[in-house]
Amino acid sequence: MIVGAFQESTYTEGQLNLQPGDRLVMFTDGVTEAVNGEDEEFGEKRLVEACLRSRQLCAEALHRSLFDLVAEFCGGEFDDDATVLVVGVS
Image 1 (cartoon, helix red, strand yellow):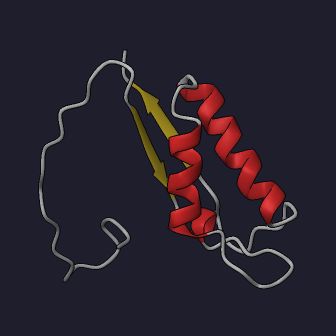
Image 2 (cartoon, rainbow, N blue to C red):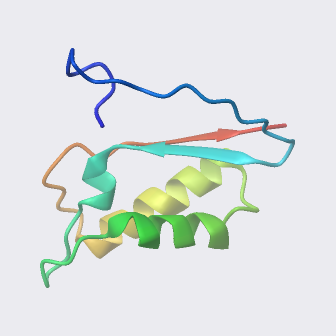
Image 3 (cartoon, rainbow, N blue to C red):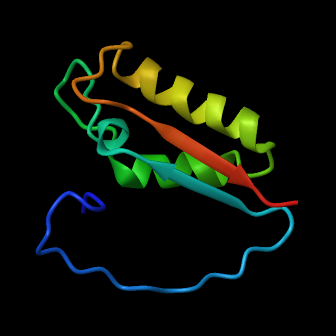
């Protein structure tokens, strides 16, 4: 759901306790909806798996790794805005 785009939208508030070493990854749908030459989407599952494989990286390196992986997947051709934001907890 796009935050703030639709007046009638409702959201649930929650709380999450982050610990040192945790990474918070936020992204736009242009990342998960990036398509390869076979018209296959990158998808959330692939993004989660990539995050888990690289979770030991610092926030900057994890960001670069994720974005590079998606760009390679779609040949650098994004159909929508593609934004990845990674926050590292220290």
